[in-house]
Amino acid sequence: GPKSDIIYQIRYWDKAGTKGGGCNTVGSLVLKTKAGCFVVADIVKGQWTSAERERMIRQTAELDGKDVVIWIEQEPGSGGKESAENTIRNLAGFRVYADKVTGSKELRAEPYASQVGGGNVYLLKRSWNREFIEEHRLFPNGKYKDQVDATAGAFNKLLAIKNEIGVW
Image (cartoon, rainbow, N blue to C red; front, side):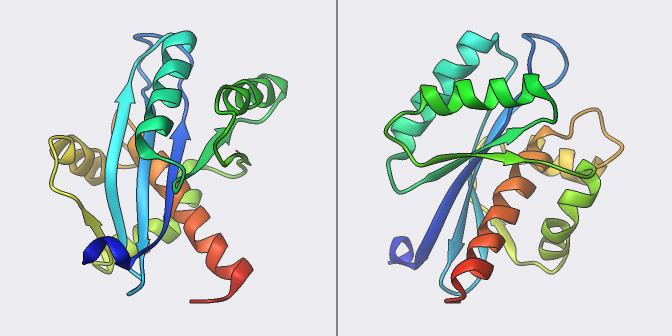
């Protein structure tokens, strides 16, 4: 079945710092299939305190299971490093890595945007789809960029695996 077509799964977290502070923390689960398609399978998002956020990230990892590799966006500077390290510690037992991001969100989203434009990115039909599509439509000028950022992050990591192993 379609489940066996999945060759890799990444949940990428774009963390926001403050509860009700405008930005969302978003965890985007993206799957890569044997056919070379990408599927956005799940979005977890909210405006949480750091303690709530870490609890949600842990709970999501437990629900996702061990097949999902987790990446955390690490903002530049010592605060970003410390925040990423805290999340990694919180996820003991899972495969979790910090992504030291460089360049603008727009630039990082370009490879993903190309695949979206080419019709190679699919969404599982879920309640979050409308907001997700709307944020993408308005990017980079909309109020929110977190879902695009997290999904592009997962996408870029899925591409990097391909380049490292060279099996696809």
